[in-house]
Amino acid sequence: MYLLLSILFSSLIFVIFTHWGQRKGHLYPVIWVNYGTCLLFGEGFGSLMGEGTWRMDNVQDPAFLLLFSMGLLFVGTFLLMGTATRRAGAASSATATKLSLVIPMGVAVWLYGEPLGWPLVISVLLSVISIGLFSASDGLKFDPILLAVFAGAGLVDAALNAIRQSFHSEMNDWQQSTVIFGSAFLFGSLGLLKSEWRQQFSKSAVGMGFLLGLVNFFSIVFLLRGLHFFQGVTATFFAFNNVGILVLTSLVAWLFFKQPMGFYRWMGLLVAVLAIASAYFNLLWTLA
Image (cartoon, rainbow, N blue to C red; front, side, top):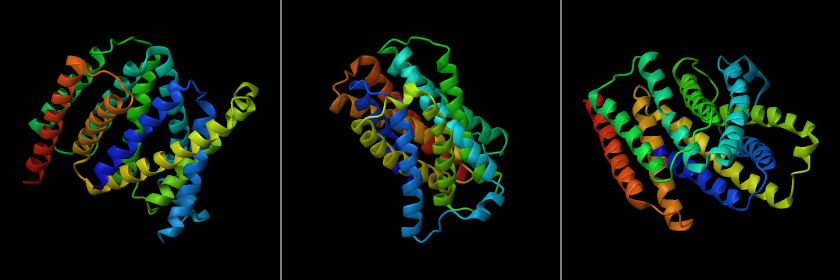
């Protein structure tokens, strides 16, 4: 269930960015308001669910410094994705983001000793082929910033997994998300020092940032809970998650944004389904 919700809310982020991109709106105010909204939702829902909210003794938690530093990584990756989309195109940016699954999967196998069965190897290869087919339909335009997007997206997933695997944090998902989003909001506030960025704020940008924040908050919470549920086989989780997002966002783009599929995209969709099936078989093989 958490895996499906993670795919759904992560895909909704794509929908919001696509809509805002079509309106040619400024990126910074949306991202800044987004993280402020995430922070408020983290505190609000944590209290509502009775799972506790931010406490000062959280700074002594083993994972606090990593969680806090991830705020800068989150802001930087979001800005890089937005810039890459404008400079290299949406297809190239999305491809770099999804290919980053090899980083957390590699870390899970190398550092945490997770099993590397042949079904998982096949799943990774099929995932890369699928992403390549999706990109071929639009024509990739390479830009060095894509390497930064690739690294940033992969490091975000790997760091979230490290919190589960290595740091044994006593904070729950709501508290962890509060630290991450609070840090991202603080680092993002530095952009207010730039007068050009301060002038980009508008009612529509604030409203879009609020909507993005709501979706982004739940995407991280469900990702964290999905990693907990897939403890010991997180490499398989990342295969499911990234390819699932690719499939769903492609279908949404086709149905609601009228983006043509074409032969390569349909083939990419078919290969993606095979990659998911292989990842599922690896899960069964691992648990057998």
